[in-house]
Image (tube, rainbow, N blue to C red):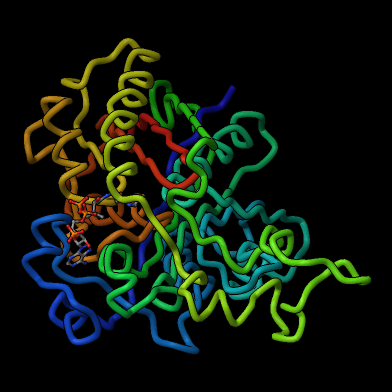
Length: 352
Ligand code: COA
């Protein structure tokens, strides 16, 4: 059976940089608070009306495709991970296909909705398809445009200051080289706290809270939305919400657990890791995990300072930056790990 290697990698972040000082003009926050609590100094925001999630994804994808030595027409499967899609439906996978000019239909497109662990989930799914021999050139993209869906008033400051826009992409191909490629992945989920880190409205769930009419729906229809009411908008219920402390506490437990799991699976230890790329949710979370693993600074790649949390895009952006900086060499053992909304979490070990 083949293994799966990353044959090409690329990333794209919008040009527009938004600093903590820029956010301070809209909400009651401070550069000190944001840096001290999260490590974030600035983030990128997409160009309104031009840079949608699929457009950012396509920019990253073109680089990954070229570096893999193929053309868009060679891609036989697309996996697109995002929590901020262009549309409610269809998903970004087919939009990316169109954006890349892939007109043939000998291709499938799958959308992954696993938020911060979307890339690890996508990588694991893609790995199975390559190993089984079903596909030979899988394009896996993680992309987000958070900036269009955040609350820029003081009410939303605990969430808004943390997020940024960007995209990362990889091309997955089979390899026959022994001990190369994705060695193992482990995925987990726990729906107990699903609403503790969530973007809930609009969604069909909210229809159940209002009185039913003969048609089975309620007064929200007059606002023309999918169960989107004026009350929801007035009360800020149309923005992401987060119990930051619960997320923080759970993340610092689950990261080390799942990393140990993938290492144990391969008979390896933290000392064998050449580069650790944690999902960039909070620099303090990453530093806690780094300490727990006993890794020196030069074996961990953090970029949250410059981009904030770009959710499904975070790991491919960081991996690509590290690769471009010469920190990822053939034979290196790379560990990626993510935790996020759901809660869902996972980790992979990759031999480059
Ligand atoms: N600027 C200034 N003050 C802020 C603020 C902001 N942007 N956001 C929140 N505050 C205030 C709160 O209102 C609170 O004030 P109070 O004490 O008067 O009530 C105070 O700061 C402390 O808030 P708290 O939420 O307890 O802070 P914290 O130390 O837990 O840090 C997070 C907040 C969000 C940075 C932290 O909990 C975190 O990173 N959690 C994990 C987030 C995460 O990983 N999310 C993505 C998952 S993939």
